[in-house]
Amino acid sequence: MRKIKTLNNISQKGLCLFGKDYEVSESVENPEAILVRSAQVDTDSFSELLAVARAGAGVNNITIDKASAKGICVFNAPGANANAVAELVMTILGMEVRHVFEATNWVKNLDPNDPALDKTIEKGKKMFSGTELSGKTLGVIGLGKIGVLVSNYARWKNMNVVAYDPYPSAANMHKLSNVVSVVKTIDEVIAKSDFITVHVPFIKGVTENMLNEKNLAAFKGSIIMNFARGGIVNMDTVYKMLDEGRLQSYLTDFADKKSLQNPKIKIFPHLGASTEEAEENCAVMAVEELKDYLEFGVVRNSVNFPPLDSYPHAEVKSRVVVINQDVPNMIAEITKVFGAANINIASFSNKSNGKIGYNLIDVETSVDDSIIDALKKLEKVIRVRVIHF
Ligand SMILES: NC(=O)C1=CN([C@@H]2O[C@H](COP(=O)(O)OP(=O)(O)OC[C@H]3O[C@@H](n4cnc5c(N)ncnc54)[C@H](O)[C@@H]3O)[C@@H](O)[C@H]2O)C=CC1
Ligand SMILES: O=C(O)C(=O)COP(=O)(O)O
Image (cartoon, rainbow, N blue to C red; front, side, top):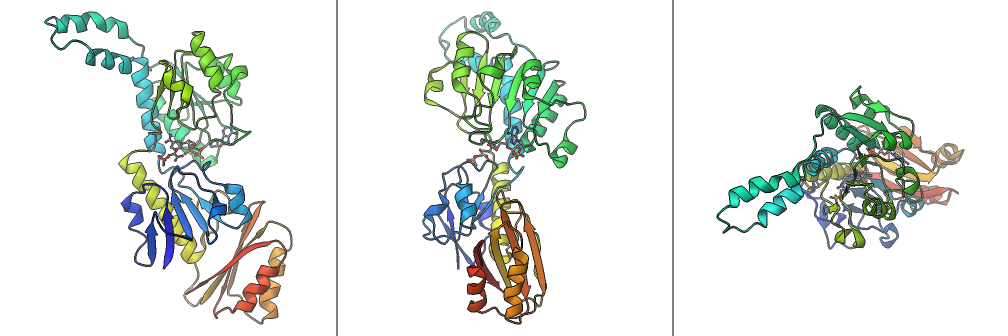
């Protein structure tokens, strides 16, 4: 029985894919794998752990470096919740420019017994006169799965879009509307935008404070949105800009203590991915990744291991998974161990990503412990496991 620990509420649509050979629950001890959304995971706390799957996009809640050092594969679910976030961002932006939050709140608090209620409403509505999105410029920082969708939705609303990403992937750019203006610096986005939205991962010391006092000084627009992570936009700068009237409002999925008290900051309870569809998509993708990894050693959508999508052929009895530091000569060292034991290798697949070397060695016999021990003794080998068929 394989043991899977869940650390958040994960959609049944995904969980039911595990099947009868899996024990899956919150209370599992010594799990082989963890399925998680936003809960913190310290991979060093689980001695048997082979893999962690994030049923979502951001992996800043998981100790990736510690995981790599122990040969633990970390997956995420790229794109599986992107539409949920993109729709929410565009919806909230549309509501904000029309002052919908304040307006509906105002109506709700009117005296229901006022005999002139209709008149009061008609008179009061001028307080909430807004602007339209059409013709305005949206700045999109980060053109990944979410940023591309947000850009395209904004184009459909007849907005101009100025976007920036330092590492745009060909697959994402291919999906981007060809009238989006892709610029080379974040400063260009800031200077040209009426509204800015950020869609990059939180990486300490890299995207941390990516929008800050220095670059936001050039912002002439009115709204900044952060549905990516707290910490990407420097909050002291936001408070200052709001106080000085340089910013109309800040809309975010991530609360901090001080922001709760500020009426110009609208905070949502990390709601971006909370739709039935996104929760199902993420859970299904994460469970399929975990099953493929545990049962076949296949790596798809890992954030720390190289991709290796290879299934064994029918005669294979054992698949040996060797995870090593990505240094020269490892393939030779590994094959030498099989050669010395006179074992024929049916298939050898290898991929590396600069940090991790990942090897799948298929043999048509069973593999005894002496081979595994010899592989484990190789310098720079991090982890070895055998999958029997
Ligand atoms: N509010 C919510 O519920 C949700 C929030 N998120 C957040 O949104 C982020 C983005 O999600 P996706 O678009 O799905 O991820 P993604 O991986 O498809 O896109 C991220 C983009 O950021 C870019 N990027 C990476 N480092 C950068 C840097 N230093 N500067 C600028 N851009 C950089 C990448 O090149 C990539 O194109 C996630 O990492 C997560 O933190 C994601 C899903 C739900
Ligand atoms: O996928 C992400 O990065 C998210 O922030 C979504 O978080 P959640 O799965 O809703 O806890």
